[in-house]
Length: 149
Image 1 (cartoon, helix red, strand yellow):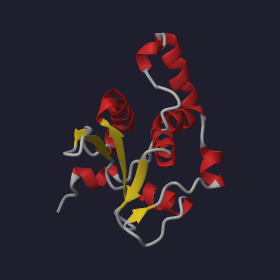
Image 2 (tube, one colour):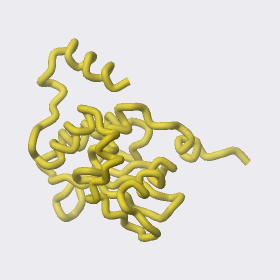
Image 3 (cartoon, helix red, strand yellow):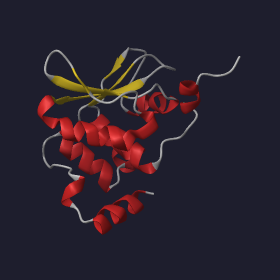
């Protein structure tokens, strides 16, 4: 039998940008959900933050499960695929055998892994700043992305 293509995605390591979006989200509005071996990141934003949720979706690329969708309670939800990375991050964020891992535990190890992009995602999740790619000149966008590689 051949492997389902979605399972193959679990073997792809996240790139530097994806990792920082994940890390910044976990310090902000993201939560790890699921059990060991089947964890994923769930991010919930107010519906007014649709452009920001779409920005995260685009950065997550193949790690995103589907585009953000509007829930019945007026919030947008974005989920990733399940990935072994989230089991590693669960230990950093105080996760145990529970289905929902409390990601608010800002452990020193997580903070030491943050780059300016991850910090910006975290601050944007807290409504302290707004990430808008269209506010940068093309050369500035390229320079910021190159710094994350």
